[in-house]
Every structure is written in C-alpha cells, then in structure tokens.
Length: 439
Image (cartoon, rainbow, N blue to C red):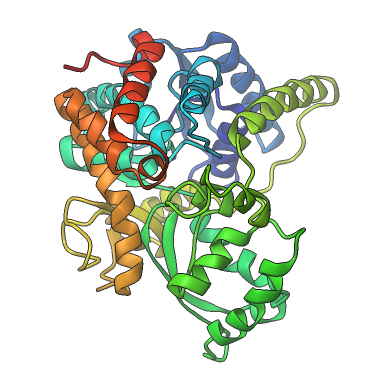
C-alpha cells in the first residue's frame, strides 16, 4: 500500500502523521512517498523519518519525490494522500498577508482561515491543489485525499465541488474542543466518558451538546463559570467564552482565531477590546518565526542525539487509514460538502464540519439537522466569504475577490469599499507569481 504526503517538508507534521502510520500494524508496511518542492526540507524529513522507521522496527519504506515534474510519480497508485502544503510560506506570503492590510489599518491575528489573509491564502493555494487533483484523477483515482491545509473550508470545498477527488478536510480543533473547555473551567473531573455533539463549519463548529458519563447536561455548570473567567485579566481564551454569553454555545477553534472571524473584537475605534479579551494581534507571524528557529534547534539535537521513540498521537489521519483498511468503525469530525443537507439551515454548496463514520466504505458524513438559528447565522457570515473566494478561484474574476473581502465581517467592519478594493489590488500585486491573473 502507498501513502503519499504532499508538503512533506512540513517536517514536524509529516513526522507525526507518518510516525503514527508506522505505529499501526495495518499501515506500517506501506510505502511512504514524500513529496515537496523544497529539496532541503524534503531531505530533512527523509532523514528524520528514516531514523524513526528504523527505531520502530524497520517496516515499510520511504521514497522521496522533488518538484512538480515528479509529482505524478509520487501520487501514482496511492491509496491515501495527505495534504499539508503552504504555498508561498512565511516569507514572502504570510508577511504580505499581514503587512499590506496593516497599512490600511486592518489588524489580524492568524489570517489563515478567513479575513483578507485567508482569502489570499486560498487564492494562491487552490491552483496548486487543482494540479494535485488532475494528477490524482489520472494516476490514483480511487485514493482518499486527507486535506490538512488551511483555509480548510475553502480548499476542501473547492476539491469537493470541482474535482473528482474523494476529499475530506481534517482539523485538530474538534478533538480538543470540549476537553480544553472543561480544563479551562476547572471541570476536568466531568470530562471522562463525556458525550458530545459538534457541528457547524471548520474553526466555527459548535459544541451543541455536552453530557457527562451519566448523561447530565454540562452546559449549566459551564455557564455558571464563564463570568469569572471573563473577568480574569490573565485568562487567554476569552472570545470563545464570550460566544457562550451571546450565542449560547462554545465553538471549536481558539479565541485568537475566532477574534478575527467576526466584527466584534478587533476594532480600531475600540482599542480597549484588545486588552479586555487578550487578543494577540500579529500572532501567526510570531509563531512562524518561533517555529522556524525551534525546528533548526530541534533538528540539530536530533542529529546529535538520535530520534526518540514515536508514540501514536490523536491525529485523525492514521486512524482513518487504519479504519478504511481494516473495516473497523471510527468516528471523526470531518469537513465535507453539505450536498445532502447534513445541516439543514446551511447551503448545500457549503463545506461543513460534522460527525462522520469511517469504515471500509470510507468517510460517511452523519445527518445533524438544523443548527440553532444564531449559530447558523454566525456560520453564514463566514460561508459567504468562503463561497465567493471559491468562485473567484474558479472564474479568475477580480470582482469576486473584491466581493469576498467586502463581505468579510472583520474587513468590512473596519474599511470602506473603495479602501477594500485598493487593499485587494495591492495584495494581488505584492503576491506576484504566487497568484494567477485576475480580470
């Protein structure tokens, strides 16, 4: 069996996912095909993973493929394809995504999912993923495509609507959502054996139900503790708790993410909100710099001291593959097309995040029904931007890029239409060859 990893130069993530596969008896004999366009980073991943493979018993084999001319060979005959690319990287593209909007007074925290940064990231990534799709349709048409790249809903939604590739989008936030909430509120003792229902869209899926092992609804206890945490000046995760106050439900992704998914918290006319909600502006560039430096140090230590034993993580990818291969049931929160009206009050063309059953038949999304109307309304403010960005990528029409930015909640709350259009024009020019031509 062949498992292909696109963007294998993301060494830490490749190590986790492929290391997990090497810990699975059903997957460890696979050929792990590593693909990247950066030869140096690909070599680092090969070195680490080869050492890990030996540490875990020497099963399977690792192959490397460099550059677009070797991409089809990397994909040929694959049963599973994992996608973790970042088109344009931190330098120059992430820097551009932050610095150009900042000139116009538009501040961001993460800028990889929504907002003007998320729009630009999608527009430069979709053409590359379109190329992946055409190659896969030719050389591994039955493969399951596991997408980890953000903006999740835009990229997965494009693949699901406009290619023949069997695609599911995977995120880390569903697995850790309720556990983090209960820990933050000192309710850890109620976590073991809990039951929950999470549905919505990626990074804004709602914790609709949460019960302890005895079936007791935990939301009353959660809501009793929200006010104290919001009043604590040291507490960081405030935006999501504020969602509970105003919308009744907690959501999956972190507060630094959700601070920029709406019109409420990052407002130049109300600068005091930044401190009140502990919002870390320019957070993602800081993380990128720290990760780059941290990896250099870690790689040097690994080369000196050797690779440690890998313990299988909670990451979905290997468990999905194992479930499909062994026909063993497994449940995930997956990003899938809403074409069967899984969430009845969101559009059919939206990419939604819902519980999915995985077994030998692949990924099978589960019906949820209607979200609370206020939760669906919040999701729609993001879905509008996602659908227009997908349309812009598909048609290459500049007006749709403008419209996506105009309808973005944070962007439109800070800037007028003419300024938004000027900012979009400058961003497109600054990205240069990373973006296709728009007309």
